[in-house]
Image (cartoon, rainbow, N blue to C red):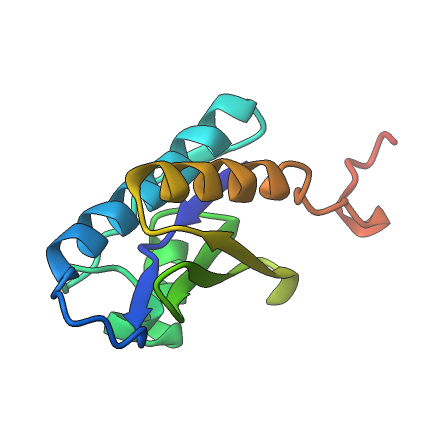
Length: 149
């Protein structure tokens, strides 16, 4: 099943003095790529690339309608998107959503948290999210079955 994984948005309201924008950009980029790799490795999904007119293919940069259009144009049946919010020095919140583009149906909305602002923390969070997405494949309703069934 074709699946598109949009770039994740990132917001930092921790109030830390040090500007960590470059580190966060890299970590979120790696986070998204790790989710794509995990989904591909599961063997249930064929990850398709989104082509966007902006550098980032996320809901914040494109808006929901354009992101959905890009996923459909890429041939995706499912679209995964979300974001991460750094609340404090140690705590980050994330949200991930999966939409069935054929049915215009939200299949999953999950909030997750993780501690730390390190490469390892982001990698572990991506692993958790990838495993959470395992099995999100929509069930076929009777109308989608081949005539011989």
